[in-house]
Length: 413
Image (cartoon, rainbow, N blue to C red; front, side, top):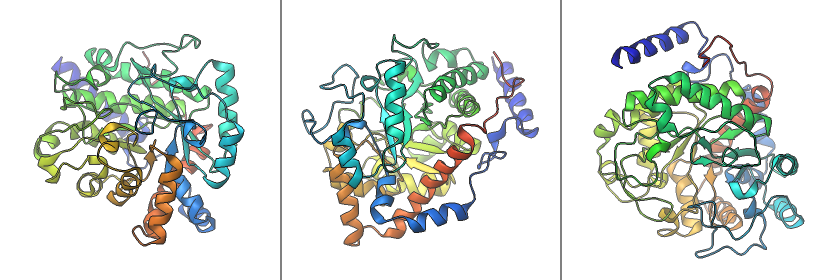
């Protein structure tokens, strides 16, 4: 196994040296982002509300203010079978809300997807919304696959990322990412919130488990970068998650507080290995975890709202320059500790660029506008995030639909 690993690593390094593995450079080498001046020109023309809208990636239900959410004001995100509604088309209420509240992205869940005809119509309607939203989904493969686990779609299914990691062959991770990316691209998705870059080191972990490739950080790193490359070659942007690592926790952040007691040095030896590999590869998005890391931050604050984690560690020490997106802010680890406004403004203050799935979109949006108006947040801080988001959108616009190439000689199964 060790010899096989070394051979694989050597092969990948060779590929990097010949520029076939195009994303070994931080800016994805042969697919550079659109010129900065084009982004700056667009940014200068935007109103504050248009800018704020770009910071939010929400589920479709967040635009329908007639929907009454359950329990503490949100739809339960812990499973896809505990749903009070099945919103599968853009309605008049959503269009009305969107006129005042533009949105940067829409994430679809299993209950939003019925079959190919419905999905095609829905995505077309979403594209017409104000804010030019990108279309996103959690399609990891295995148990988290909104399309793959829908019997109405004839797509290849994968047992789990753990099973792929167990093969020891990163070509299988590439094949998985490329297969998923190909059907996501066909159905109009821009971003896949995958792969999981967590290292599954805690056997008592109830939320990650086989979603992770391995309990070996080096093995996980190889799988993560190959999966990312597979997505990229299919024309879909990947997102590594859940920073700074959800693999050594026991609790589930969907429901409440979870923590890792590791020090930063311990994380650097384990959790950070796949994340550093993904960053070096050139990942466009890193998703935060809502876990606390008290031996890193000195407090119980969730990583999503910690400037130590996001600014000092992720941007500072690891040198990451692209988009930081939160895990869904409607999850219990956030809602049990913070109000909607506190959580939204707090994560932007900490360094996040995109707020995913706030408990109440309209309220969260208004809170950010108010924070800028009263000086809690500066418009320059908003601009920093919007600039990154616009660059991603230009990147997808310029390269996502037509510019990605699939090299038939690279890592074919």
